[in-house]
Length: 418
Ligand code: LLP
Figure 1 (cartoon, rainbow, N blue to C red):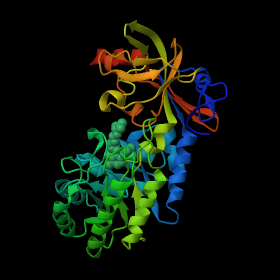
Figure 2 (cartoon, helix red, strand yellow; figure 1 turned 90 degrees about the vertical axis):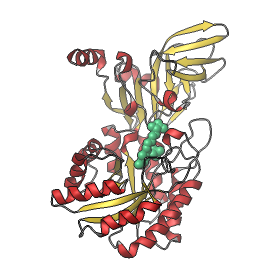
Figure 3 (tube, rainbow, N blue to C red; figure 1 turned 60 degrees about the vertical axis):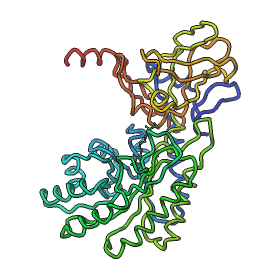
Figure 4 (cartoon, protein in one colour; figure 1 turned 135 degrees about the vertical axis):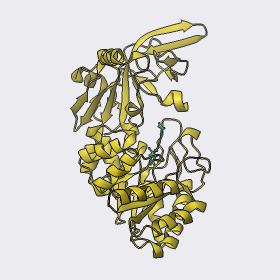
């Protein structure tokens, strides 16, 4: 059993553990993220199986959840990493991800980050502009190295998602437009072998619930790779990107395996089955397997309104405030039941609002904010003098690690020194 569910007594369970018991056993301060690491690795495994015998690399988008326990578990299952900063590259390496399974994306890599990527010998720097490619060449010359690069195409494809997380359309800052590809090829071909194009990449954006746009982009990428191959014999992979959506309770999403099948088919249809398929999923591997456990501080009623104030806020989970995302909130000891309450956090912002949830006649005790395993803790802040949340990791029916909140004293201390 993986993910969030209710047992026969209606108690909230994550993986195989009752959440209320986990919080007691871990002795952590709330709010606390709790993760079912087995659920994450099982999802990774079934994604990998979906590739069949096609050569592939799942480059986990480590930005989604960068906890060492998670990254080490994925590394042990053969995953690579898609990193978007020097720190993420270093973290991945420290977690045991082989350098040749790390790609580095990002629109504004600094010289220091490019140098780091070159010195560690990662699979490829995924270049997002002709200007950046030229800088990679300069850094390779300056440090006397060769650089393996991939070009991230911006295919000009709109996806049906929140504007803040769509990246593959014409107005996005990401990627090289098709009309600039020739200029990028010219930089590589004129580099006296300093730059070697090992890949062609794309990432359309996040939270795609259907494979349609992914398929169009995959076919475009494959046809570009076919045209380019005679001049780029080192080309060894096509990176179709991540962005596989999940069901947050509102609408079903196609599975990661469905996206994998689309990539395999596109490559076979293009007659390129020897190339390695790279995918960069983040959310779909981790989101359903994390919850935030918080405590009801109080209720407030002012006809006709009904609020529940909890001790987790937008600083702990910013997705509702930033993207109007709805995360289901449930009491730990009773299943959802009417009436609905507006659940809000303690932060002094109107956007610190988790929306309406059926918390029963008299909400109290502990609640779980569901599907918070991706882009949760990693986007947390200390706004309003609120300490970063705690984290608890479950594996094999046991708590395997706990990361305690640094606490408010740490915040006060740092502010005093500023
Ligand atoms: N590859 C690249 C280059 C990316 O920029 C991203 C995510 C991914 C892969 C992974 O996408 P995923 O499979 O996780 O959808 N904070 C937002 C999501 C931002 C995604 C940023 N890039 C959220 O909470 O919804």
